[in-house]
Image (cartoon, rainbow, N blue to C red; front, side):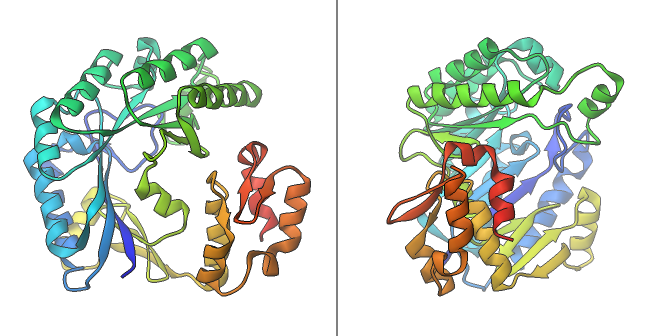
Amino acid sequence: MKQIGLYLHLPFCMQKCRYCDFSSWAGREDLKTPYINALMSELETYRGENIAVNTIFLGGGTPTLFDGETLVQLLDKCREIFDISRDAEISIECNPGTADRKKLEILFKGGFNRLSIGLQAWQEHHLKQLGRIHNSRQFRETVDWAKEAGFINISADVIFGLPGQTWEEWKETLEKAVSTSINHLSAYSLIIEEGTVFYEWMKQGKIRQMDDERERSLYHRGVALLESLGFMQYEISNFAKPGWECRHNLNYWRNGEYLGCGCSAHSFFRSVRRANAAGIEQYIERIQSGKPAVDYSEEIDMETEVVETLMLGFRLNEGINKKAFQNRFGFSLHERYGDPIMELKNQGLLTEDEEAVRPTPLGFDFQNRIAVAFF
């Protein structure tokens, strides 16, 4: 039986970060219980479909704003409805300051086995500018409590390209994060999106976006540093000690099937891409009135699925496995795409061996050029 990923979106935050354009809201405590009830009801719509799941990811927002018991009840509901594998990776996002030792113990005993902690930066002035609610001491404290609770699989999120960020600060963030004995790290470049406080500040001249050359320098030096510390790059923005790669995200980058539940959640399941209603209230209202949560759906034909598989796969260090590609689509990679692959190899963006076609480090920098070649 094919196994899929399951994503649950919990869009509540203690405070909206100034760079964040995700589907999340602060100060909506009154909607937390109705939202959980709606989420439980959406999960119920899959009862009896015999769907096998091997990864679950609770993201947000800040899922750990909810009490541990509620989060475990949500996981128990998933167990009731889906056929969850015994070795399933079950992740939850957490921000320092929202989960104490007791809550982490409840989560671990309840079945969560992977924790993704939002650090973003080590320095207090960067954390304050970003609008984060925590400091670096609280991050270290959260990691320690998680390990005491039983968590072994722990990840941290960090951001580079912050306004005024130096190499020394980025280096300190990476070294301090790794020193806490985490085994996975996601490093994202700051993108200042319209609708965020940072975007308004940039228009007003209060902050400046880092230029491309400096941003790329931080990225490449960070990759080299992390690899020297035992964290291998397996995707453009993701690094792990061997064997600790995030299975949920690997399924996504391999263009595997996944279900998303909750407001603004996306799914790719049975050749259909879907997106749920974006707003919390709209989502709750849809569910309470017995209407589908889905706002948008599109049937994906094989041609589109092939191209998306290539675009996502070339974000991974492993690239596109030639045998797996042929088994999935019924034709060889070179049969259809031999010319663009050869051209991209000549440009130094792809490399190839008997097993796979993979991006080079230069290819990681020029993803758009790779994507365009396959259209």
